[in-house]
Length: 251
Image 1 (cartoon, rainbow, N blue to C red):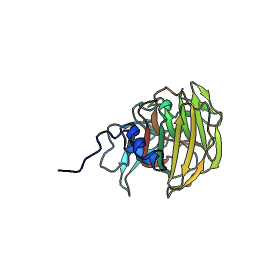
Image 2: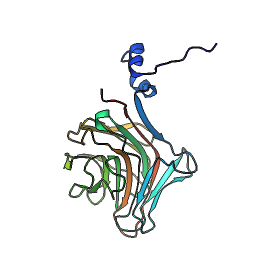
Image 3: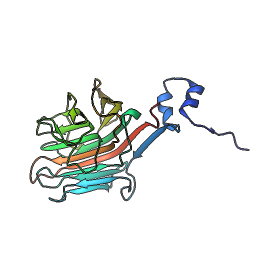
């Protein structure tokens, strides 16, 4: 007879067995009470669960699988001014469920480009944030990292709650050409925290909490987007992986 298996792999039973030890947060991923989406993009074609969007001109291109170590996808803006390419999923994530997302990305050229990594409320916007220069958002609800050379040469942490922009956080972190980094956005009800990991996965930054970052009960999607800020200057964003997770219930 086989050894017994865990019949109820719940968060409650995990806590009853081991208490709130240091390992609890990691082991919690294995319970029925966690919802997780993870794509390492190892395969021949992009999974049908992903939704893609692009400008449709200037040779912009939807995200596609690309040959590379560990699996990759590439998003190409094309040569049109403000041409873009974006990837998202269904609107399944909410702040009241403590949703978190992480994306490991690199861009071929950090000049004249805008990038977004976070949670947004739509699949087909030409950017959740229209421009950082005037801090004008397209999305009604959005929380995430934005890099926009029309404003600065650094990543900025942003959020919008029912069309009201939160005070942005400017940590003076700059991407490097063709160099991976991981950007993480964690939403707890309406408060967000932002993290950055270097190419080797070591944490280099954690923000102060951003209040009023996003409406807690609006359904959101993980979102990664790249946009050219100059005509005749196509940009390519490479994504190693996207992961998003949250609690199954709010209590």
